Image 1 (spheres, rainbow, N blue to C red):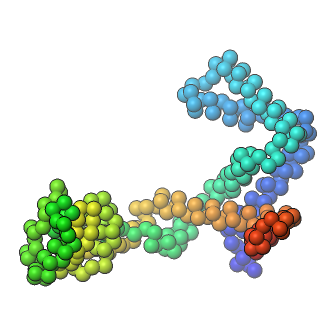
Image 2 (spheres, rainbow, N blue to C red):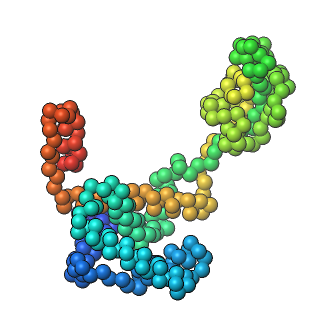
Image 3 (cartoon, rainbow, N blue to C red):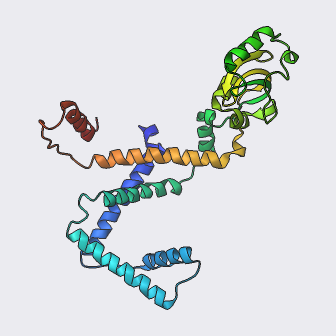
Length: 293
């Protein structure tokens, strides 16, 4: 139980629920339905939005127009709520749901991870922070344009070659408009030239032997890899900002899910479906989802 109480995620959930509850109480106590409060935050928000768009402060006339537009919008908004016009409006639901998510986003930014937490996260997700494969290789091409059956032509050339000797096929095949070798090249750069199917195959074939045929968009290739460097962890200090962004994103997902589940406990759901209109499996799925099972 003590370990559970130390869990940071529980602290976030508690803080988040406290914010929502306090906000609701304050809103009810300080205003009534016919009172509109316009404070410093509102004015600063209007001015900031204007300056962000126009790169200058508004003139007196422009500020008056902004205020009148804002007042009109607020009045119409309050009257629309009284008339229940927001009920079942998908756009409004989506927007308000997003604003609730933004509140939980703010909670994450309030407590950045310690160096120890970030290092632990980096160690746990190490496979996400690896260098790419690197290759030094030679290849020959048997193109679709110059061969009716390029696969068969390449296969025959391979069967007649001394597979262990690089020189036995070097310079063979059909020319390409770029070099027929890569030296200590990142997998990504090879993929840009010959495609992902080609580079995927490079990961598993033998080195220091002619292998193939391997297809790309240019034809079929025979490949001789002289060096293949396996992916290795990128030091944390080189990608700390990237790891921090990933850490915050993952923590945000956990917080959103936890808050959702906690808030969901405060509500009950009733199911009123016509059993003759829907498949029993669909009704069962809806029922289990509403119950959270």
